[in-house]
Amino acid sequence: MNDRRGVATAGSWCVDYNKSIAEWPAEDTTNEILAMDRQGGGSGCNMAIDLKRLDPALPVETMSVVGDDDDGRFLLAQCDAFGIARDGVVTIPGGATMFTDAFNALSTGRRTHFFRQGVGAQMSPEHFNFSRSRARFLHLGLPGAHARMDAPWQGEASGWVATLRAARKAGLATNLELISASRDKVAALARPCLPHLDLLIVNDFEIGAVADVETRDANGSSPKAIARAVEATLSLGSMSLVVAHFPQGAIAATREGGRFAVGSVAMPSEAIAGVNGAGDAFAAGMLYGVHEGWPIEKGLRLAHACAAASMREVSTTSGVVTVAECLALAEKYGLRPTPA
Image (cartoon, rainbow, N blue to C red; front, side, top):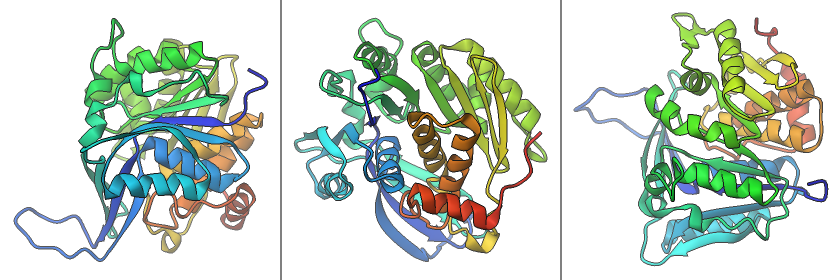
């Protein structure tokens, strides 16, 4: 695998209609959208663009399905604009591209997503061909957002398991992105994938669901509980590295016994436009560090810096800048205390 370089992203490519509102409304009321833009979204899109923003020289390829519509053409143009190889993107004639209405409440910074699968419901392991890929890593997602992938596939628990197995057979190391659905749904879809993963980079809610550990209490995220969930998840699969991030920091563990915790960037509230895409940006920074052979703590610092850069914009990827610029932003604001 030493001759491999770069990252292949596979799975969700959708259009995000990012909409800022003053606060989350009550039902049966009329509310103004204060700002709106259209961006690429989904795990395959966000990771690919974030990596290219971090390091334009890094080879990035992608595999997905889009519809034969304006949104699909918009996403293909995004690939071309960032230099993302898109030979693996299949256009389904007559189909509608998956899209998400992403609402960002300015009063709380919380986000709420409504998505329509469109042709994403038809995506299956047959849409992913790893035989020609020279990438070192596969970043795959999103379980819970694609009907055929979520279902059993040719003797495997799901299309996700079948795809991860195929990628590993072709020589790629694997990482899976999860969706913050119900705890039961996250667990049911993620656990069968764990024996086929080399990395897992998720948030505190998702790691808690996978490990069946309650990671949040009345005070917010609990670092001690998150650490227990990381350890439990590591024992359930084949991952060499498990990372869980949360607003105050991140906790990581390796199969060799390494244990790490790094505080997040102390971004002032006035510098934050939204958190939509911050988790994707964190994962991109972490995966970049792993790809480059960085020490775990250095990778965690870049991951936090990339997430902080992302939060300066409402959309998912437009705030991310180069590795050097992200690290300079983290230096400017400093890191929060190490979570314990």
